[in-house]
Image (cartoon, rainbow over the protein chains, first blue to last red):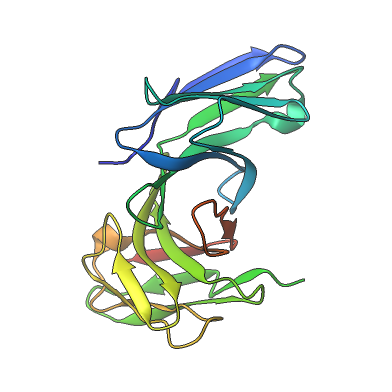
Length: 111
Length: 113
């Protein structure tokens, strides 16, 4: 089974609202990453948080990591129509140099 | 900058045919990987490589072969295509190390009939 599982599977919010997506994983990791995918295109890297970090910011993105709960959240503030996409968390195992993806959250921003 | 280039973009195969999906990167990345994405789902890792001459299996390796003879290229071979291999295939690359971010190609949409 996949390393990361995301919640919710789909999220629809009004433009200007904040969007929060959660990711849980199963084993020890080196880092956790978030990616965005627009309409079946290739994924674009958004942000990486290391296992010894608890919070990281990049523009309107805020990521938290709780290694004791094996979970992470991605917050997008002041959402825009262009944020409509699928968002995936991905983890790199401590034991191997490979990146495993979660199932994703489909985010829709209503005008 | 080319980044990660996948060819072809679209392919239709008949059951039992073989083919190779090409992936090339020009960023001198050590790490390369192949994923498949089925409709409405996340990406599943097929095979990956941490350098020329080194490959390893991912989550769903059966029915696929890879080799890494150069740093730039990481082809994915389907030995005998099956309808269950209908999917979108993504190649990704990244720098070596424990904090690698992946750079993706635009994908190959494969249909097996």
